[in-house]
Image (cartoon, rainbow, N blue to C red; front, side):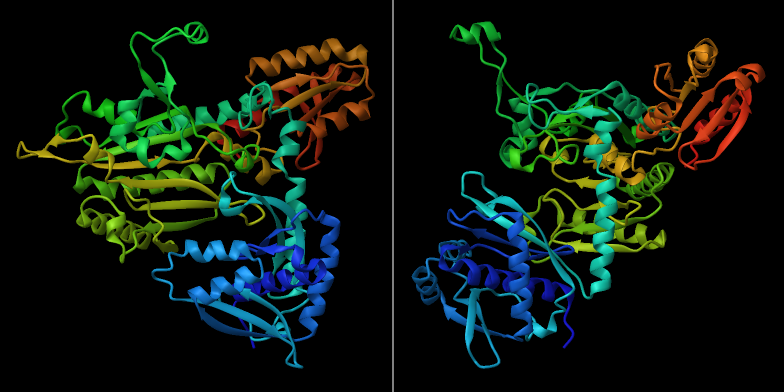
Length: 605
């Protein structure tokens, strides 16, 4: 019988649990084992047993043996008390805790299943409410592969025990599995952690702190090109720029609601009523002032809005800011540029009247697609996050605003003739949103642009404008990011282009390579003229051989390698090697400069 892939993956997670249990017996305790994108995982407490990645082969072999036995999945239910007693007898305490977390006032029965062989021998039993395949031969034993192990805190809380998570891939058939593994091999070649270091873009230092990237000159060249482009495009879209401080008074965050609702992602308060020296000397502050590092810019922009009364004629307002924000991420959540503790959002807020709202979102929609296209992203998934229609108490303010806003988002994607996935229950408590997830060259989706309604802050901060009748009216507030953050976007760019960026973005556009020292003077002249043309260029006048100089340039992903020696000096030219296309040519220096300046200006990909 054919089953959905998520059912196959979930069933495989239990086959893996059975395999681990059969190898390590009762010493191992089971936690959770869901299906995930591209596969599944299961969390185990090995209870002191040393389990390494080399042990995965044994587990995978055992899983295939279980599949060949064609065991049946038989489901049944037990009353809560019986289920707890059964699991306590087996010392499966993680499962017992899961039952208690289910709020058993509503859960009167707990789902179980058991695996039974064709000879009616019971081989394994686990607690689970999800559907499974009918029998293990419904699973293609050649279409899954155990991948790696990782640490995972029980219930994602670092105060709890660290469990061992076994990850695996699973697909409908062997061909899709092979295709995915091939994609992963290509992704490893594009790993931003490796390429970023080779290109000297950024680094991390334990002395500075975890999750705090340091941007090197080459990294800042890339950053500045992105930011300069961002600024120019916003000017074309009639945005105004604002700036806000890195810290804000406790009162600000209490009013915004972050003090209560966002505390798990914010750093503890700062006492700024005294100096560090006074604090070290235990001098009591004369006047206490409590501030917090900002996790976002929104409340500051609201305060700018409220500083001067507004008329309906002044709307819409489009305010943008690229400024650093700080969010507390746990150590185990950090991952190079993918997740850091300080980052720069390309933030903007649009404050408008109800009758302007649809036009403003259409304008942002067009802006997003234009910017993403310039960076080389032509494919993206669009997701609409709406509220749960059955749980209206979870969300803030007027239901009519929700209905109106959600209908507007539906209308826009329909008019744009784009496919969008509606995700009910995914909306933030303060408003619906539309997300753009860009697809890189390997087909992987990355969260990028977001257009988010906010019905919370206008109410909390009493934002108003005088409408055409002279009455106070609450505006619509829309949060908007194009790139999400510069750090994450650079991570995606590195892996999308494998470090071989389009010429307008690359930190090193060219390198001048004299064949030997006799031509260093001419190479320096070439360098000077390129720099005068604002081309990002370096010179390699070291004593290395020509082959090594070229190899070094290629390892640094420099777009153009300009070799100079006798003939080039005589003709006032350069021998050009295009690293990206591998083409070679001889050009007059002036012609080369004109050609690549045109390429840079046009932002050719």
